[in-house]
Image (cartoon, rainbow over all chains, first blue to last red; front, side, top):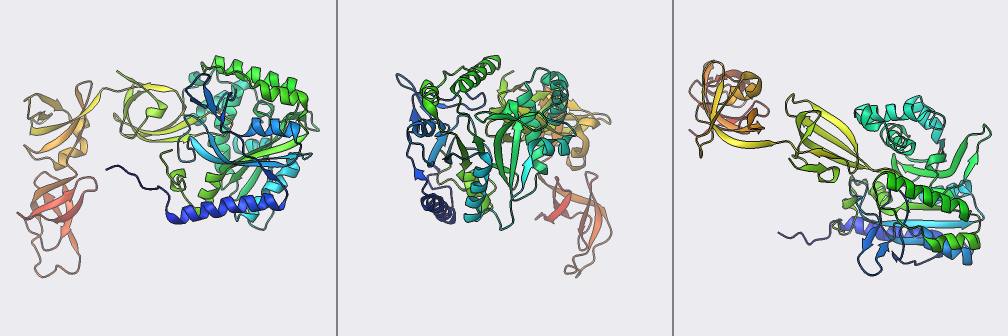
Length: 317
Length: 189
């Protein structure tokens, strides 16, 4: 029989509506402007590990994996606090915590850095009932990694990381001998570090430079380059990812090119860089911090749901 | 043999890993937002029965294993080998104690069972989930003691020993769950 009914129970629909209303009320009270950007764009992302859903046509369209590039182009003209609350799309991501179409909240704060933005994320989560009254811990990526694995993620040799990654995956070391450093870190963090994080809302900060993505890289007092990037975990589930944003167009172009090289090395299609974004950065993106938060995962946590399909209105999407 | 990518790994799919045929039990997608996607896969090694947990990069692939489940009739045991036949084709095969294992405790001649073939040769034998077997040996039944819920060991005609209620006697037929070895009910006949 064709299963045509909504997949979420009624109380999940009600909680979702309340959550969306709660988010909008939070930002309205703080004069952060809601921006309705396109989900269908003319370019996608170069990210090595994010694949756009491509819509056939001439030229093809790209369903946006986040509103980031549109919002940054907007900020270059209207430097004011903005947010987007709506759908985003990522090809091939399907599992307990993933769905190719999902609901994303993303916001930008001109003039702020990542630390100020973390405080606002914490306040929002407290407002929405996802964090208690006690302050949420800020944990250092390197410290978490050393505690779990006895290895310094900034200084360890590639060979050491590969060895540990192969062991964690229970794979023969030979299969990991050519893996890039960043992929070893992804695996070790997911399998060995995340399960040891405290429950509740936790901020992980100061990512290794090779995991900077679109964050600024600065040196610590000890001279270690770290990304001003943070991730928010709620009960050990990745909930949000934020940056003190890179605003340097040349550096951004270099990172896009590096993405392309890594994509080619991994045998993935190389995507053209978004020239409109680069032009906006060249014109002048204000100093700002930005963060993206998975709304479906937040709802899962609020409802105690074990699978993302339990909170999606229609899970076949 | 076909090659399967991590996104095609489903429960029950048979693949080759480290030279052994394996059956996939679970496949969990793991991905840091900005990072590499992985699949954490639990699979049973069909030769040893052991369960492995391996993590693959999403998009990695494994070769399929030539493993098929065939319903066959158990014919007889010649003292060393158990002999089975496909009723439709009359094709026969034999399996030793290592392969038949626990299934031997539940099989009567002419009973149907599932023989798992790997490259055409038996790899494992699975009895039906529920079998009805006659009691061969047990202490005499105690009438009227149906309420206390007490049990006693009973040896079935196939050699398996199960705990049965006190009121049952030699010659009674009982229904047993072969996965747990537990008595379910008294059979009608």
